[in-house]
Image (cartoon, rainbow, N blue to C red; front, side, top):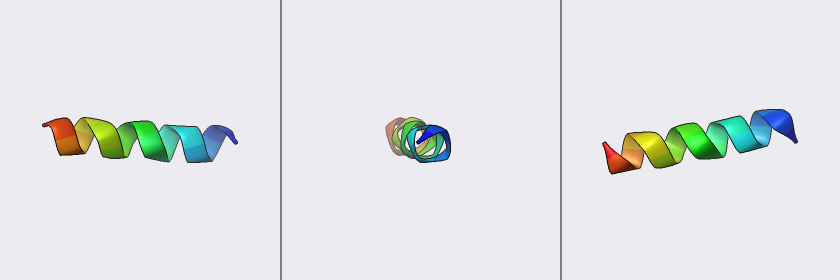
Length: 17
């Protein structure tokens, strides 16, 4: 689940930004 975690984290960063 490395890709999933990466995508989720990236989404959070984008949402926060």
